[in-house]
Amino acid sequence: MKTRYFVFVEFTDPRVRQFLDDLRNALNGCSLHDTPHITVRGPYTAKPEAASLEKWRQGLSGHGVLLIDIGLFKTPKGFAVFLHAKSKIFDDIWYKPDYQGPKSSRKPHVTLFESKSLYAAQSIRDFLLSENLSVFTLGVDLTVYTTKQHELLGYNYGSLDPTYSQSPPERIVFRDGIFERAQKLQEFIAEQENGSSPQANLF
Image (cartoon, rainbow, N blue to C red; front, side, top):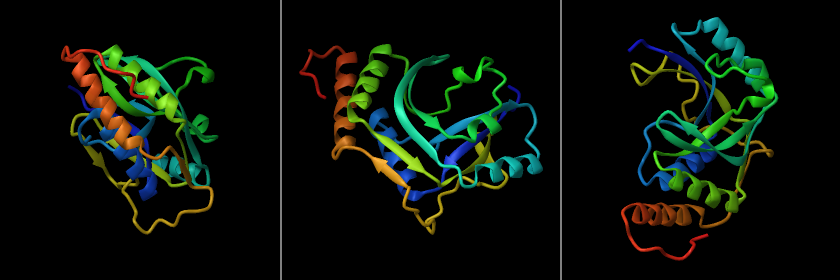
């Protein structure tokens, strides 16, 4: 398989990154190895030039990203549930030739859950819709990822920076107990798909 390169927007604020990591792990029932991210460019057949990366990186400076509203789409492997990602800068740095269409069809997002099961994906989507969660952060940066090596390349712009100083607009909105409810739902879905008897609605 040929190496393909992608450009990710990743989250550098520790609180935001931890929240997204904990939520994804609870929903999927395991610790995920990849970091929460938004794919904004690619695939490329060669690694993007450093000058281009720096240009896109500078374009991100001062632009916040809002994660809000839950969606679901079909993937080659099944189904994915995601948070929409909104920012003024995405139109300027967006390049995904595999997904042609008008600007209105673009869906920058952070994937929260993946499954081969439509039932599982719909259950997770409905749960997250009921939670009314949202995240706003100014702490974002760029990372280059390669599918062949499964590692981050070059400067890891997306590495967690514990010295990051949160500014007043930084915010995470969620209901207390979301991780426990997410874990309980994940266990419930597993029981249903293993043929256990129906239980009461969990959310």
